[in-house]
Amino acid sequence: MKIAIAESSIDANELKTKIEAKFPDYKLSFRNRSLINVAKTSSIGCTVLVRKKSLIINGNFPSAGGAMLFMLCLLLLGILIPLIIYLSVFHKKMKAVEKEVVAFVKEEYNLS
Image: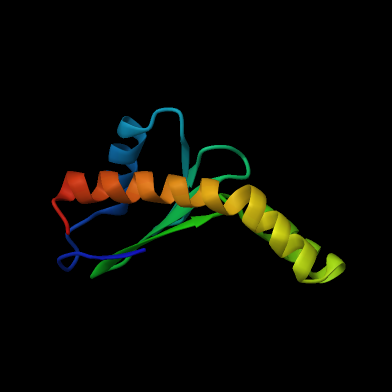
């Protein structure tokens, strides 16, 4: 989900600290200086990309290794079987984490 913000109004380190305070059971880490991984479990989470004029929050595998493993399964097993497994097991939980983080960010920074 893309959220418009004022230019350079949100710092990634500050946002990470606030998310950690709100969700103490989630594990947060930086993938690079502007991409924050929010992990509920080792396979369920979301990524928060801090850009100059927007925040992009997507439900995703919280680690690069998890995403690569999923891609490897897609290549080895074909598209249909891993896609059905992904949609039935992971997608709803990832969207739930994404919605929690989006609601918190909108509330914290008074965004619409």
